[in-house]
Amino acid sequence: MTCVTLTTANTPGAVAILQLHGGSVVDVLQQLTGRKAWPERRVAVCKLGEIDEGLAVVLGGQAAQLMPHGGPRVVQKLIERLTRDLGCVYESSPDPKALYPEARSPIEADMLDAVARAASPAAVDLLAQQPRLWPILLKQAGRSAGQLQSILEQTRTLDRLLHPPTVVVVGPANVGKSTLTNALLGKTVSLVADLPGTTRDWVGALVELTATGRARDAVAVNWLDTPGLRESDDPIERRAIALAKQQIEHADVLIAMRAVGQGWPDERGLPRPPDLWVVNKVDDASQMQAADGLSRDTPLTISAIAQSGLAALQSAVIRAFGLDDLSGELTWAFSTALRDICDADDLDLLQDYLGPVVFRG
Image (cartoon, rainbow, N blue to C red; front, side, top):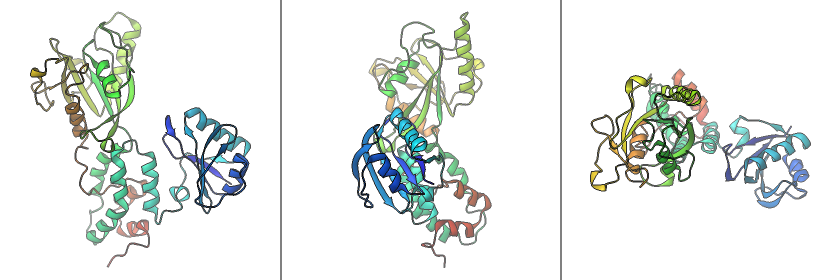
């Protein structure tokens, strides 16, 4: 049986990767592309049925990859062709060792799988270090109890690089929440107008924040722009505000925003205290001030429309997640197997997981 798995994010992109594993991957490629010869590790440009033109390669053993264009419809039609017409079975969460036969150990296979699925670019370099860092920890741990369990707290923070945390922005109507969302994304996802109630429902988008300005350091977050919290006779808007409060309650970081000349949102109407305080529409550069944004008395000052102060805001959000310093060698229990090993505090299980290349004296 040949299985197919989408190993890139299930979102639009330039290129998608579909992994074939098990069974006879060469037979599947021959039927899909019409190409007969498939030498290992030779990338070929070919027709992927009548659906698309892309790249394909046999990795060796019973594994191959298809690399079509990353449009969701293209990926969907290819999966349908492989499963309906060519006898493949779709697997959403296969064993990483089957997906990455080139891996020398279970930790390397899990690392490659995590890199492919990580939401944040900042995760990539840190994940790549893990097959090297865990053997070092194993040698240093000896037989000391509790060494592995202590890593779990740090792991809870770092896991936010794999699964995007949520940022929710709240404030009165017309303080610029939608303008801020659009400025961070570089495109319009929220309606912007000088009328209260313009955003009648919460709008969510995946935003990459960076404290350094470098794309490789970006942290992906689910950024939610809520409707203005105000009294309204409109039943649709009242329902939107009620839904927004549910998002606020579960936010990882809550930002309270007001504009110059307006008051803060009423904390009594919020299900939890804000983490950051931001004043928008500070259009006079001389009024910009350095502040931590941790209280009403020391708010961050920005101009979303002029895109001033946004770097400081991004840094503050990343710092609130505990992801502001990833420069060191951080040991991360990024896989289910590693978390189970840490919970059990079992060094022998860790030795097995790291593979035969690791030895303890």
